[in-house]
Image (tube, rainbow over all chains, first blue to last red; front, side, top):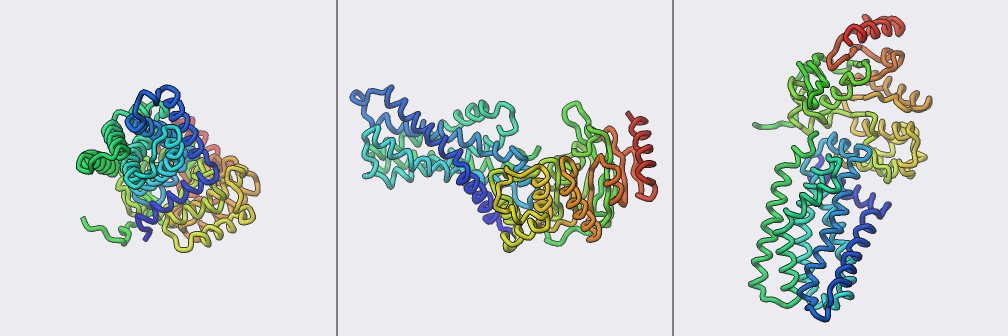
Length: 226
Length: 247
């Protein structure tokens, strides 16, 4: 019998293979994220503001905006050529489809972040290397929530004609708690804040990660149904 | 409730009772009733918009019926049971293939989804059966419609399903692809698999059928044994009379 993890792995493998061949998603997300960072660089006078305080907001705006491009493609790719119907016809759990797509998105986002961090570091003149471990953890938990919620809403909006508009309209308000937590936490990591203060934000982000994952598991069957 | 791996026993491979489907104000199915024993081949004819694709969508669990009941391989189609989906294969207008992946990669992906042992070998065997093994490393996006449909046949058969739903499988096929499909359908019939096929092609549809249905305006206006349908010319007259009588 095919295991749940085997099904998830098959979907992730297929998404990676597709991306490896087309490089559509990564290149568009990376270029967009760099452009967002550049726009902020030119609009903010870093001689007047502290880059450790402004930078985290810019970084997360870049991640979320660029990630939305990827999310828009995530289920649209399945809808084209009715790939989603092929998935729905297979004897697999619908949650495996969700987790497969969610994991693919999460990994694509993390790879994109790995590439934009050096750009961010150079433009904002922030030493990320001394706090790299905690920063990567913050990026992981923040991106997990973004990917969990974004994949669910991407599956929902892929049925709509106005999906490119509807996805950000649904996603951004619901991302507010994670975005606030991630920005504050990144700021504290970069300024060397106390661990005790950070734990509140970690708790908030993890709490919403769990909520969004749980809601996704509970609703994905109905969303994927016609 | 305790679930076992044994399929529920049922006399009929497919059973449909009062199946209805409404899309907004449009009633696509208006009480479809039929039963099909294991190994029988049903061909459904009908004008465009008769609800044939909707019926196959419900039987393959892709679409939820508004009312009525359907059982496939003993499983209620609304139960969303993966064991039912393991029993069925679907060939439709859409290929369910990814154009950026090669033919082999597409089939390996489906073999993995179905949890088959040695996915590469299974996928390669499938491509050999549709005579596309030489093009296995080419992207599906570069294939002609006929070639895509042949890969789609291999995809639908990869897990050796006992029941097949074919939605106008001959659409867009060239002569060679049509012959390959015909050969496959004959094999399916010899292997006593249950098949439901929709088509507009009287000759091909009648050749394989054990049962014949004429679907008009969301219901079966006729459901006959093949012997009662007569030859292609007689059936065409019956079809036209039936369709004009209902419309």
